[in-house]
Length: 297
Image (cartoon, rainbow, N blue to C red; front, top):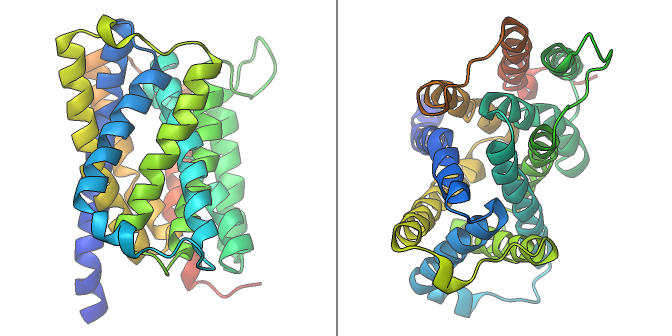
C-alpha cells in the first residue's frame, strides 16, 4: 500500500506531461505556417528552456563533477533526446498526427529490447507477445494493398518511427542513470536537443533571421520554452521513479489527448484500418507494463 502511495506523484507527473504533449504539436505547426521550420522552432524553444534551467539549477551545475564515471550517461541522454525530439517535431509537422504518434509509440517494443541490453531486464514470455503484437499492429496500420507493403509511406511517418526508437532509448538511459538528479538530466536533455537541433537546422539551411520572426511567433516560442522547461522536470521525475516499461504505458494518455486535438484542430480522422492497428499497438503497450512481474525465460 505504501509503495502504491509513493507512486502516485510520479504517475501523476507522467499523466500531466503526456496530456500537454498531446497538444504540443499544434504550436509547432503554427510556427511552421509562420515560416519557422520545425528544426528551428525546436532549437529556439529548447534553448529558452535551457536558459531557464541554468538560472534555476546553477548550484547543481557548479557542484557537478564532469569527470565522474556516470557522466557519459548524461551525454547519451542528451544525444538520444535531441534526435528523438527533432524527429518528433518533424513528424507531427509533415505527417498525420495520429499515424506519426502511433509509430512513435511503438516505443514499448524498443523499450523492451533496450531494457534487456542496458538494464539487464530479462525478457519474459509476455515480452515476446508485446513484440509480436506491436509489429502486427504497425503492419496493419501501415498496410497498403495497392503497393503490397507495410512500411512507413511518408517522411513524417519515418520521423515518427525513428523518434520513437530514440525516445525509448533515452527513457531507458534516464532510468539507468540513478547517479544524477532530475535537474542535471533535464539540463542534459535541453542542451542535447538544442545542439542536435542546431546541427539539423544548419545542415538544412533553415535557420531564420532573428529580425524575420514576428512578435507573435516570439511569444509562442517563449511560451513553448516555458512549457518544455516544466514538462522536462515533470517527466524526468516520473521516469526516474517508475520502471521504463510502466512509464511508457502511462504516457499513452498522450494518444487520447492527441486523437481529440487532431480531430478538432486539424480535421484529421483515422480510418478503420488505422484504428485496428493503433489498438494493437496500445494493447501491446499495456501488456508491457506487466513484463516486470513475469517469470523470465
